[in-house]
Length: 565
Image 1 (cartoon, rainbow, N blue to C red):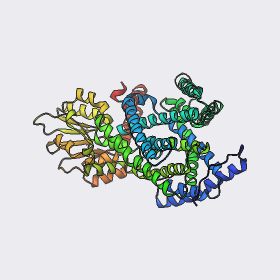
Image 2 (image 1 turned 180 degrees about the vertical axis):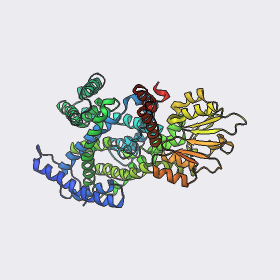
Image 3 (image 1 turned 45 degrees about the vertical axis):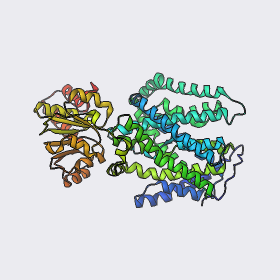
């Protein structure tokens, strides 16, 4: 059951090994039992992890909980760092940094001011502000990975903004260690922290690619390599009297997954997530207490800031930066959770006796609440976006269409192509060969210049926006071809109120049957198309109609896109 009081823990010099093993055993046994219940009911596992923690908290010593939570966070930070695509960050870096800094500064300043108004001292008001400002979504990140490799704009933006805010988190951790927890200002700690990231980038660009190429993807060796990196960087951080989370994040950056030979590393190291995620969520649940009225007040402040203010502010900034409503809203919905960096900062501050128990309890409780909510928003972001649009919220935030639209007068009998990036170019070429007029609907501003150069008719905007289809002259169109890999965008095309044939992309045979029953004129299933093409090429090879070299070139052509050349 949840604890009823909170006192600053007295940390022993060494925790006996049998106590750590007992704590881990209890955590995994409780998590496994409740996980079975969640699996049978088809429910999210996070509330059950938190419940397991609440039960374990009555038995496990609080000092052990703090240590386990810190290590769980450190390894999750490492795993997130591995997935950061630094090269992709360059394309969205300016807007991501702008959004991250503005959101963190505005929300952090407002919450800090409220903390002072509540009567907190500046340091504890600062902790409250940090918890509200460093908002990201560990939970939503799991929904941002597309197994097909097709990544919509909002996913790339969300990952870049998360990366920006995690860098802010690292700076805050370094700053607190050097200027708050230290007896005297320790600028050398900041310098060493910077040096650690310089080392990580040096390994990334000068060593890691060559090393993994030589290993040729051996899973066991790659697993040991990943563990060696994270343990080594954490050891360096500890030796320099830095926080372990700084070393873990630097290790992730050093072996981030945008090199071809690191894919095997990611696949093997990702198994660590199955070990550390339960530790993190269960220990978080174990740290929950029965809140006082003061704690409830701080918690409500954080919940409103994280669940409402952060997503709306991010959406507003993105809309003002030229993004469409759907991209803006769905990106904002990935910043609806107290960041694990905020939790780590609170844990370190509590262990150091630098944060009051009501503020610490509020951060823990707000983290648990927002994580549970994030499981819903992560799964249903598309439906939430459509509900907000239907109720006028997106228009109220300032969405505009006219600046990036070009439609010829008298356009009719045209083919409307949705999603230029994922096959739209090929459809455009086919229609051009048939001398059929076309119009492209796209929501990725990065592609806008290319679309404007190649297309006579285009509308920049969200497919769930009725104004987009009015501008696209849907009623006069001959066909709509939707190539988007995102289910909710395909549903928006299927649900169009117009007597126009619609062909949509699907990711499974079940979805194909569903969309055909709902009125789709046809479906595009990339896996089936690829299999048919390979089958035809293989038959031609076996019949002697093409050479082995021609077979290889055809295979290469099946996965190459115009952008590859």
